[in-house]
Length: 155
Image 1 (cartoon, one colour):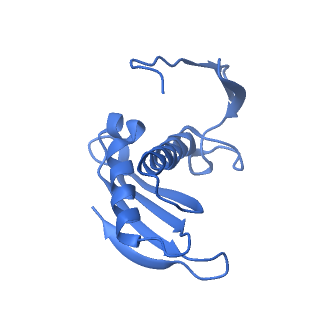
Image 2 (cartoon, rainbow, N blue to C red):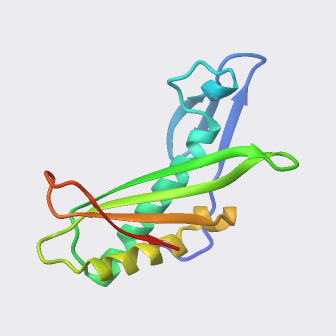
């Protein structure tokens, strides 16, 4: 990683109706609409979806870095972030839950991977800047065919 600070910029273009075109120098443009629950067309990215995607992706990439630095083995990781939007003197997200399902390599220590997942959660720049309390549930699987086993809710 390059030395900090890092700088990022995103620009959104909006007309009276239709999508908001969101651009970054680093990536292709996205057409963003309100979520279906707020009158959007559905089956499109919304700002709410993008926020949850940033949290999920930030967690996954933080875990990848932490695991690489520790030289611990794993096969793959699936991260799902769920959130509750509610009224608390204003409309805001009031609850976030991160569910991490990780497929282990043969003989891998679940406790060590659990500690690394907790470390990844603490190191996630996106979640840290949002000052979120994220509930983390970890599921372990030893093969593609085996159901994931809930190991521990991590706080």
